Amino acid sequence: MLKPLKLLLVDDSPDDCELLLLEVRRGGYDPVWERVDTATSMLAKLNNQPWDIVIGDYNMPRFNGIRALKLLRAHWDDTPFVMVSGCISDEAGRRAMRNGARDYIMKSNLSRLVPTIEREIFDAEQHRRQRQLEREIQKSKMALEIARRIQQQLLPTTAPYFKGFDIAGAAYPADATGGDYFDYFPMADSSLTIAIGDACGHGVGPALLMAQARTCLHTLIVEQKDISEILAGINRILYEATPQEHFMTLLLARLDPQTRQLSYTSAGHAGCVVNSAGDIRATLGSTGFPLGLVADAKFLCAEPVDLQPGDVVLLTTDGITEARSPDGSLFGLQRAIDLVRIYQNGSAFEIVNNLFHAVRAFTQISPQEDDITTVVIKVNDVPTSTEKDSHS
Image (tube, rainbow, N blue to C red; front, top):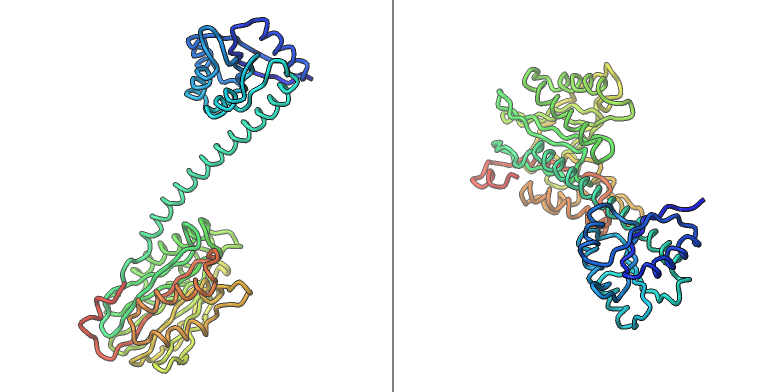
């Protein structure tokens, strides 16, 4: 079966065109073709339809191949142009190719014509597909950038001033969007509720789950003061609204400025309290299932932790503890605690910032595999005048 071919011939000789068409038909093509020999007639045909390939003579009385080539490139950038001439020097052929011709062939050697047509049509199709893919990637990048900006607006940019404490948090998504979450909620009774969570995976899907959980939390925390009941309410909504394989861990902690106690409840998320000596003084373990797995799950509120001056509450997502070095070693909790010990005299922001850079150095700047999120709460002896300025 003959292959269709839309062929534009730029040649002043009808006889030479017949020779070219004969060779093309011998090669298994059924050409739909037009012949032009002036800029005006070529422009009309270019405006009429796209062509699979353009074959042009180098020298013509009223036109020439270089002008034809430039005219083609102005209209169809990816349509191949092959120069065919009865007399063309190597220098002229190279000049034609510098101007965008794909090949040049002598009319005395037309056996090269069909293989050249096949190669150029294949390359042109590959080029078109590549450009289409690049356009789709660019559109995706633009969409992801919009999503990233929207998601960043869902996370706090600064921590609230809270007398007697220095607080900081930050999230570094692995993709344009991430499934990690942290937040602060100043309460009417002067306490502060802090949230940190991790939707399974990273990317757009977990980011949507995170956004949904955030919306639920912002709604329920106004209506319900009991943090265990808030978690139960979020869980019921996520269980109904998300596929079974999707879930999210979430820890809610409440700071009381009067008693300096930390109360918390946790849906599969953990944290710890590090004392001034750099040792774990209290582990904040899970008190219930991750959100979205069990419809009627209960979330106990753990015994309050009495915080002491010099204590650091460290809340992280597994993008820190499960970060891997090139040899497969895990960063782990102990390295995070060691870093807290090193920077214990610095601000909460310094601990957060240095912890992120320590993780990236540990992985030796390999692509970040998971979202990295940290909230640090330093317990101060007496509030200082600079305490408020150190929050971020």
